[in-house]
Image (cartoon, rainbow over all chains, first blue to last red; front, side):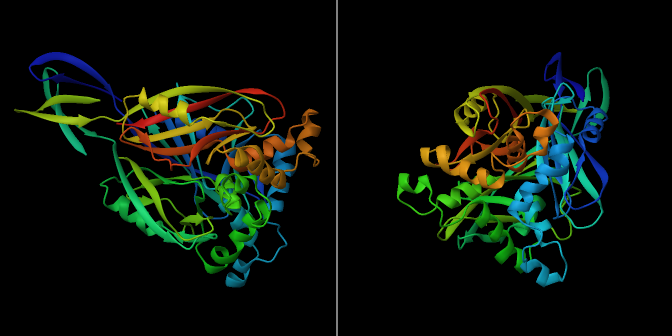
Length: 158
Length: 158
Length: 158
């Protein structure tokens, strides 16, 4: 946003780039069970519609059984390799005290989501995220059933 | 913050919402040894006192043996399940070169904190964080003794 | 940045602290294979040159085989202990479907980078990052060969 105003006693013009905040909600359907969804294009679109060309986009998964990170979005990593690592960190069939509390089956989902974390911050320069060529933004859904996820996409910039 | 100023040669009024920055320090006492503290309410309070209703809150743990993430704050996850995952990632009784450097016993604490990470960013909309119903902000203290922790809570928004 | 402007019909002066955005690229050479590089000083220097004294610095690794976090930068953790944890999470010699896709050898590098995450946010107060005394910002390069890395360093503040 550009705005002009006069300095006191001197009618010169200053151009000030004001920092703005734009917030979008991105909705995605997942299959659960370590389903990994590429949300890069939806984030790019939100940035394009925001009129912000320089700043930071913060992505945040609402809920405690999914997380956000980046990866090269190709079938090997997305369908097998990342899931294998989280199976090491919190095996699906281990005993979880969480499941005694609620009599459910997603203790490992919660633990994996806490380790991965729900938030990611990506700089934006000249309207583009500073991702690498083989680096996409992903939601990893650790829950044990299909879910509709809400990811908050908040852009702060000018 | 609202401010009004005239445009050059034209006495109309513009209302501009200016982005502000407010920083608070949150102090918590922990028992160490994977003690997990729910800091959601203290963060909410800091947001309420900031006059910021839309923006991002960044939480940052000062120090290298604790981290910040989210979870469903219930006894099973908080007292057992999350600790079990970090015991897999960096077992307490493994050998750590760090302990040779300092002759201490918290090599696993450092490693776990680096894997979890010290920072978390949460969007704020209409004065409320966009957390899920069963999603709380937690400090996980991996150190081997009770600590008083400082978490920086910085809100950028309008 | 300070700017002055008159209120309508009343020649008083308002001082407004405007939020600004400054972006730098930090380049580092790494040896790959879990090489850990301390980038704290380069981030501090970028903050010093930015004229921003209060705000948040976002660090983001461009690419999908390295990540950013904090640690106490001492030889034990940096040369042995952190690598051992990632060897548990994604062993170098395990089978990775990623390597079938590309006929390369860095499946574990990708998985580790996704678990650690590419971004970190650190508050800045009075021109200084709020790091602990024994807490440094590190790039962990998981790739299997030497790389020149680009880390985006973006400061939003006043």
